[in-house]
Length: 378
Image (tube, rainbow, N blue to C red; front, side, top):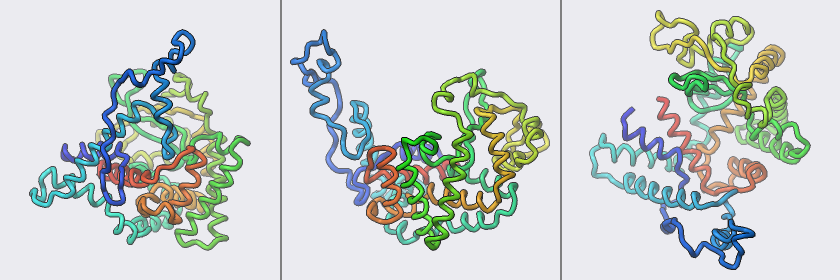
């Protein structure tokens, strides 16, 4: 990948756009910095030094309605986002640079990601091919081959995988398999009575999204129930956030060939191969990364997953994959101006309940992030 494209992809992945509907960068945010005016000298520093040092700032800077938190680093981020947005707008408006010039390529990429009229016109057309591929799944091997492709493209499902420094040998990189597959933030949202109302809204949200895809109400409700049930089973097999804090218990080193051999019901060889990985020696296998060992964060999760793959019909997993595809790509198929429209309206309701805040431009950021990740992987 060209260096300048890689840079803009990284930039776009952290960009939360302002005024995305018109690409108007708006009023420049103030330059953040320390000021004695932030202090509240009416507070006795011996009793409450925090409010003595920062009380005036806290009073004058309430959390914005579209944020769940606000701090001085948030101000810095706002300033950076404004400057980056300005740079990208200028690049998108530049029609004089040569077609292959870095500035022109960056500008064209940004403009295509923000062409909301075309995105709206396309609707769910861009995922029609993937939906057809899901319909063609007949076996768990087909399922894992498709899942490998989805994971490479940033579409989640069933579990998480990735590459990072080996926690016990930081001089090399290791391959990791971790619990995952949930749409709500963690297992408690599926199992705790504290989140009963959110679960009900989530179920309604999933059904509504299926109806937008063209299913009738009865089929959409049935499919939504299947999705939530499968995710609940995955949640039951998942560790709690407290359990995930233990670095030793979440580091389980496996010989990859043995891992595959001990779980013949799960087509790991298909998944690894389609992910560009060859278990064991890969001397005779071109273009595949050799993998002699990998780290499994939560072995009991994958034991349960293997059982579920054997117990549940392939049709249930196809419904689940359709949901993960639909959920992950929804912001790219409805523009950010359409928070009032169905696809984002449903997402908005759930996010308001889960996060406590909703940004009207968040879908634009998500769309750009997903497009950036796709371009980065290809």
